[in-house]
Image 1 (tube, rainbow, N blue to C red):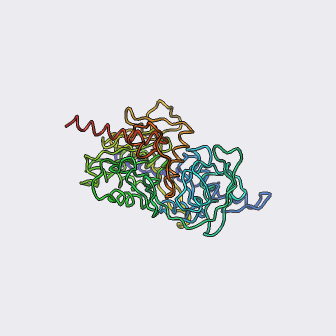
Image 2: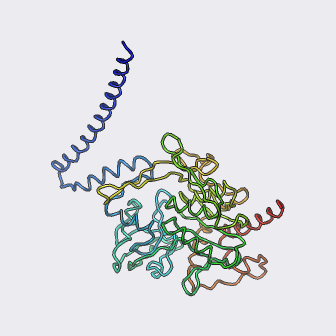
Length: 441
């Protein structure tokens, strides 16, 4: 057989294989359509075609991993509103499966409907308007809390320390979400970013990585007319958000070099995100990043990058381990969408942050605090940390004075620090950083 004939045969073989693979795929799609038609025509009860389609899409994407999923038309706007930091609702930040066992209030926005009604961080939502939410998916349960301004949501809550569930009615309103909070709220409603324990130390609690977060943080850092002695970036309980928000914030603290890279299916690098020349915060200013086991995704990008670049001390507990990237792809003419995991991200030193399904505690995943700065907390201490932050978000709050005999200067200035051992350790980390700088010099 001639070389020409061999080439023709090779091309024909490739085309045949492609046609065969394509025909198999089309046959499966045809079977799916046939099943939907049979259900519509022969199922004993009437079936909604859109519901069948949504169920098929949801099942297909949910089979991939916990973070891929179908966003139906009724959920798309609320999904976008979270990242746009503006929506109609109660003014609560929620978390649930897979990170928490049940639908839990992480925080309440100051002066929001939920805040005024007495909803507290740590409350577990049992029912919304009499409908149990325990078996609902997180997105479905969240959707029940949203609604038009002026409508009322009736919540049945389980609160730690209470023997019976609480019933609280909350009237929905237009919510503009703050994503960067400070050490305490002032009487004028603004956040004070200078720590009460040390006014030369800036405290910035990032609740989510949304479209406005980087700008909010930049304004907060620049709110002090003189230089900061140190900065504490708190991403505890921050489950993530937009990748570009995290990389923009990392850029504030770096004068160049790699922030994070992403790798797709074949393991090759898809994209490398690098810091631009110059930094908003000079390199001599120490940075501490506070993390816990609910810090995930964009929070882990920030913590891992600054740790790998030796720009920050990480304090707290090991992070959640969500190191995957989801693309949001429009469907149904832009009325719906799907989240599809398309890559894993890797911080500058190339370690995998993502915790795989079969990962063990001893395996490398997540972001581990810097050596000597792991601060474990139990459930009562965790509740006390949340309650401290809730109280300091209320400008009417006046703390009790420090106990007699207290000698810690930070606690003498801010007695509530006794309820947050991780934040107290962050202040100690700043002192460690400063002493190291003196030794190095």
